[in-house]
Amino acid sequence: IKRSKTIVLASVYGLIFYFLAATIAVTGTLNLATPFIWLLQSLPLFLFLPGLHASRLRSYGWVSFLVLLYFTHAVMVAFDPARRVLWVIEELLCCALFAAIIVFIRQFKAHYQVPI
Image (cartoon, rainbow, N blue to C red; front, side):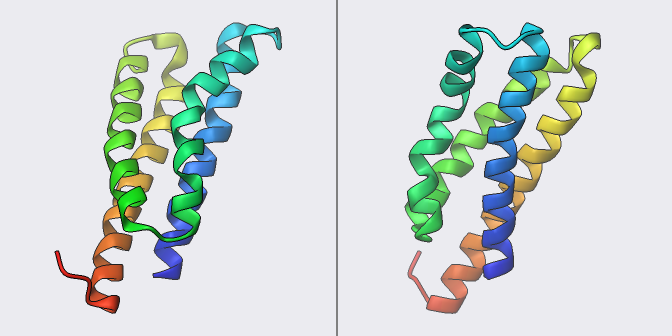
């Protein structure tokens, strides 16, 4: 359970830092719009961080839905040839996050015998 929780948290923080690096890479400079765009992309993840750290299954469930939106964004970025590297990074982080959430929820329910 601890390993899958660590992978979930690493993937979430990886997505947060990825959005900062991608925003700087796409805008080209660090200007006033950069923190706003980064915060707009990362705010949903920040909202669920306390629940993820506290191992609340409801937060893990909602983040699994949220990561599908980020995966959709990664697929849209894939159509821009100049940003293919960013697409690969975002897609890998989204897939790792989704898989780790599924593993964590299954292990948590099996270990603590939480009813479905």
